[in-house]
Length: 184
Image (cartoon, rainbow, N blue to C red; front, side, top):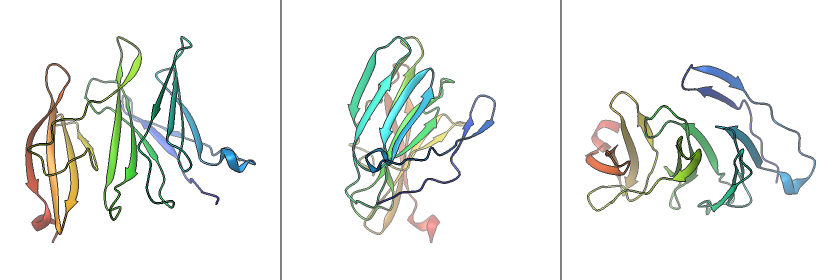
């Protein structure tokens, strides 16, 4: 099965500079879907289609490996997003997969960049006991309000939860709303 990624680009948040990315021709099907890019000097490697391995190689030679959640549907793909999720001025890294149900929203796994350690650290998920969404789903970084907003579907209703980072860097739930009436 061949997959196609077209018109890949990246916009650097700090100066809004737009970078076009070139697709490398792959002649070995085992390599299909492999992706690599540099962020904060670290080489990020993962596969969109065939495995859930994440490898981050740092400039000092140290490596971090992790297992990413992987899509249940063979037609789905792992995606990556570069965004400043904790509003500290440094780009972070997220990986998304469609939800296991109908694929109407995407589940996020986020790695925050720690500039003091010069390492990516997996975001500790918040307490979901008061939220409508039980995951980081369809995450939107609201830079103006410094909120992470998530959206999910439960039955026939769409929901949104809002989170803010506390002084210790922990993600705290601050509110929710039902979006179903707004969508209709």
